[in-house]
Length: 479
Image (cartoon, rainbow, N blue to C red; front, top):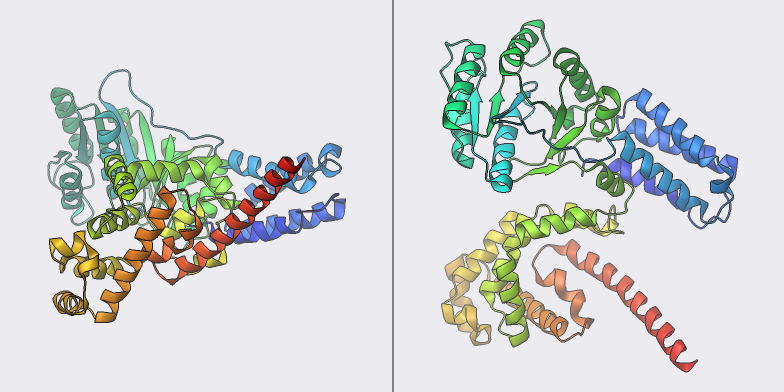
């Protein structure tokens, strides 16, 4: 996650407050200093940091906070609320025109991911609203810009209007909008030209397109990896075009995350979406409250549930539950589960959404290498239908044949079979209400060494909690 460094520093700061019955003015000053340094190091705008600290300090100085119950937790809540407010308060969505088409003008510098974002947004609207979008190729300057938009259009099955590179972009937009109205497209995306930096010629062209198109939304696509420059870019485009919102791309990259925390406070315009990765599904609605919660290590359960619902096939899940009850879980089911988990995104990010897991040391090694899944597939595809359905028949000679067929060492075949049996046993225990086999779950799924550490840690916590609850129940019974 882009905020990993910031999150770690803030959590270290709050550890000092937890458990304190009373927090002094000196404690508060030290906490505010640590938070200020953490935000500045994350590349948050200096003025934004100063206002943030001033607001938190003002609210935390109240007698009811410093001298009340759990003052540390109250300060964390204040910081969480202020972070949420700094990033926009609540999620913002696209505006919708009263009559079709809704026109969305996309702007941004070269390399920010504008064209890819057009495709992601169009795909999202098709899936959520059964929309019929049209893309207009208004970038006639960048080499292969039109071809790239056409490729994106093919990927998401959305038509692209283009008139080559010899026609004025304003004329292209006019003609494209005429076609959209004729074909009754309900959304139009205008993919405008970018530059390596903001210049007068670019802004004049964008202003002319805005005047002709009268867009419902003007979305600025900003590369989060450019740090403070992202905020400067947002300011420049906003001054010229009065943008309505921002799409922050490459949030999964090696960035300190300050751009996301600063853009709303500096421009007054909300972040609508965040892009992570090149796949057309990798576009998420930006929820300031959820992001604040993740930064402070409190997880993001709602986003986790949404990802699960989006990527896990409900019908397959019900079928799997029946198979677990009947103890007929086979290698095809095993492979299906791995593929669905992989589709949900990087495991490290997923685990970071679970409360208490963010910045856990065990997460450092938690990754699922796509090559590992390819090797597992090769082994399973080298099995016969009988062997996949009934792994008990996998004697040494069959295993050697599978190893040759998959071009994998016999040790890898044996390891996979062992992991499968562990997972099958664990699932059987779970369906019968026995949680003792849970610690094998992550290792059985073939997701790397770090998963074993993570599952052990989680199981220890769960075990302690269950024992504690059991003691309480027994105590009540004795009374």
